[in-house]
Length: 196
Image (cartoon, rainbow, N blue to C red):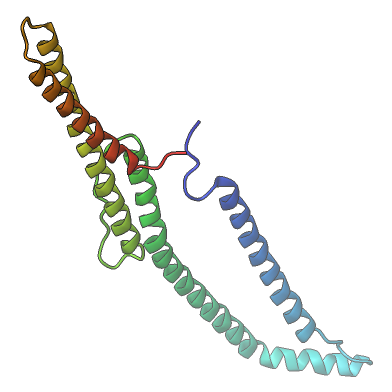
């Protein structure tokens, strides 16, 4: 089964759907409010209707220019907000993506990986914490491997002493004590890791 990532796909879909619905609702609300604010009857009589149309004809260029100007300003503001949102989301989403990939590598057993970000990214402190965790795990694993290797050497020495003829009892006891010390050292490092 593939790792779903830090942000679940269902959350991404729900968030995108909500954002689209909110945008559509906003555009619809603005359109309806503009319609109700600008709609009015042409008048009660034929003369008032002609007068209203005549006033509209005189002011149509002003209205068209104002509408064009408003739409242009709205487009510029929308573009600026989109650019700012993209920059800030990149500062958050980029590091999260990198952390997710690095955690996959760490979980596969590579304890030499160092997570680095640009100095102005928002999650630099999280990267420092991850690096500290990896260094700590690396230290525990290395010392456990060293202790295990010492146990193996002591066990081989003890086996040689037991297979040899006329081995003094004190040498066997010393080899057993060395094996006991190595096993205690291994137990100490293993007890530093809590498992469920």
